[in-house]
Every structure is written in C-alpha cells, then in structure tokens.
Image (tube, rainbow, N blue to C red; front, side, top):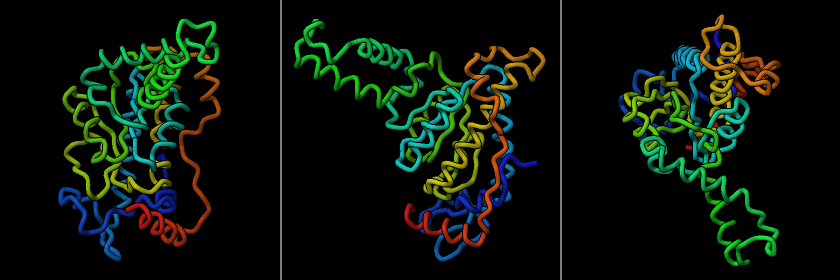
Length: 278
C-alpha cells in the first residue's frame, strides 16, 4: 500500500509542472502530457518514487541516520520548519550558507557563537558588561545567526541525507552533498535535472500544498524510522529513542489521510495554485 494516495497528489496539485517553454529535456520520462501550455507530471511514477524514497528514509533513520530538511523559497519555509521540528531533525529554511556541509567545522563555530549570544540578557543593560549600543549590535547579530543557523543548532555532524525542495534554487546544497557523497531526496519539477538527485520525486515544487504534502510524507518516514530505531528492528538500531521522541510519535500515523474533495475540483484548485506560483 502506498504511503500517499493518488487523490492526495491530485488535490495538492503535485501533477502540475512548469510551462512548456521552461523545462529540462531530461525530465521527459516523468511527463505524462501537456495541457494549456503546462506540463502534467505522471503521478503513477510519482507514487512509485515516493514509496522508494520513503523506504530509504525510514531505513536510514532506523539505523541512526539523520536527514537535513532544505527549502528556502517562500512556499517551502513554513512546511520545512514545521515538519523538521516535528521529528526533531535539522533544517535550513532561510538561506543556505556556502560550506554548511563542506566546511561544517567553521559553520559549527558560528552555531556556538549563536549559543553564546543567547546567554546574554539584552534587557539588563546595567548588569551586563556591554554598553547599550554594543548590546544592540550583539542582538542584531543574534537575530541574523538564528535566521541562518537556528535550524541546525543541534546538528553535531553532517547529515546522512538531504530533503530538498527545488534543486535549482538549492543548487549549492545539492552540490555540497554531491561532493561529500550524501544522498539527496528531492522534489523534481519539470525544469530540474534528475541526474543530480539519488532519490527523485517527480512533482510540483512551487505550490504550497504540494510542497507541504511531500514534506509531511518525508517527515512521516522519519517518524517511522525513529519508531523502528527504538525497538522495531530487534536491537539493530544504533541509537535509542529519547523519552520525548516516544511521546511525540506515539500517536503518529505515517500513512497520510486521504481527503474527501473530488479530483475534478482538485485539478481546478491545483491549476490555480500552479498558475500563481509558476
């Protein structure tokens, strides 16, 4: 049984690609047809690739792996942060800083700097060793560091894999992962290069509902992996699950719930979302 249904993909507009003049010929095999100047992605293939990626993520996490959620475009920021936090995984949803993976030691120093600044009471001018102006500058520095690095504050090593929304926009992240041999799981819209990704999911990377659905499915795979890490693999897991993780995931259903809206309306709504974002 698939972890997501065809109806859900339709309702979320996952099948809408880019305009026909904006495409990568390498994506031809994932395209079913063209409608009103927009490519329509073959959702049967999407379902198959989702199942493949889901199993890979679940197994990797079950054996102690971690996944870094990456999506800095406006349509992805909320879903990336929400789903990554739900399963206690690192994320980048503001800006990818060059060297986040390939120069991880230096980035870790900036994370430590952020944690040091968080120890300062910016409201207590008299009790601090800084002037009011210095405190203002330090607070601005902290705000910037939190935006760029807040999502990876607890990432103590490079991740086992990446989840990427829009590989063209996040090409720096994909390039760094490739250099280090880190597998990439990503949504592939019709303008993307499938050769850059080890676990592609053909789909719409511009519509909020599409991005939210697929990111939630990825987080569900992580949740299943965490449950297996705790005991489902008969002691094979490398790391035990923390108490808070058990409480968080006990009620989780990794299989997404199908919606009731008719598919015809889904295409109409999805088309509007695709038109607005493409």
